[in-house]
Image (cartoon, rainbow, N blue to C red; front, side, top):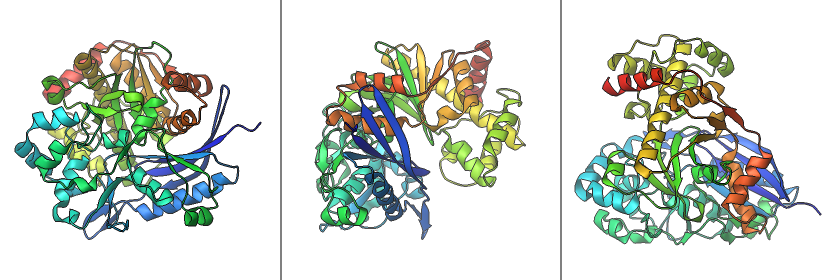
Length: 481
């Protein structure tokens, strides 16, 4: 009997992919079907996602996947961004990119008007200027013609099926979901003067959204009975679901891609004043879990540097960076100056000088600065997560594209003084297809999902080496700079 075939549409901030997986008794085979770039477009001074190009590529990938017979497809993407629909379901303009400058100063104004305590007690979210709630306030009168707001995965699912809704793990990143009840917060909507009509009904990972519209099925060659299934549609939620942790293991996680999201998995949110002051976020995971984490700028610093340099050979640069003296050049990766696109190496060099560190002058020095600084940020964030949550950790699981960077993995292990288990690289796609498989009765729970990933996917362990004291000294120098 042929094992069922599932498709994952996994959209990242720099690229997208359609992957398929066959899942059977103790087997999990993942195959890339279609990969494509995700190129934002600036129009009249506003940075947009090219959502129609993304949708076309999704259909192209699904068309290829359907040739082998598909049971189900699920869609995940980055968080916070959305499309607005009118009352006829037509899209009111391309979604605005979270790195666009329209939210400059908005977060500070909302915090002053509503108060940090109420915002955090309701949403449990880290204060970031691009959170959906601040984007909506920035949109202002632009909301008047809108009838419905759909986050990016929900928008694509709507185009596939005609069914509108909001999946809870991604909804938890908006700042408008009550982290304790899992429902939209009418309190915050009222305080902010945002129209409740924008927010669709909520659905959980594993719910079947619908089947393809007849025109979509015909154009893309999809089976008419294909299940479009809600997954943990925030890509980090899917990635953490696929962490290959063993039963009873006390682990921290780093989902490392364009962003590094580092933290621990909990059963309930942490909403203390200390947690709010430390700017930790409580995001929803599958089965009611909480991803207690903090966003770190991540590989964006390296990606944007490479783009500025004209995409040189990365392995060669990493080999050169390994020879650069450790912890000589340091930055705060989360300084807001690093958020927009642009000449990243120049900003990194200027930041070092401004903070009293030597100026990195070569490409290898810039790369080493980024990786040392990320390792320190991983260390600081995981230690704070342990302190604030009371959840001890013995091992760090690093998943996503950054887990391929051996130097970053080694530096993170040394900085944290804990073993780092790196992989799987495609954790998000794996979490996506395994939630679908659970909805179709092939796996039973989160523990079995992780057990299957651990049994079938390659990982690499990096044990800490050397003395941790130089990392402690570097952290103190950076904190006082």
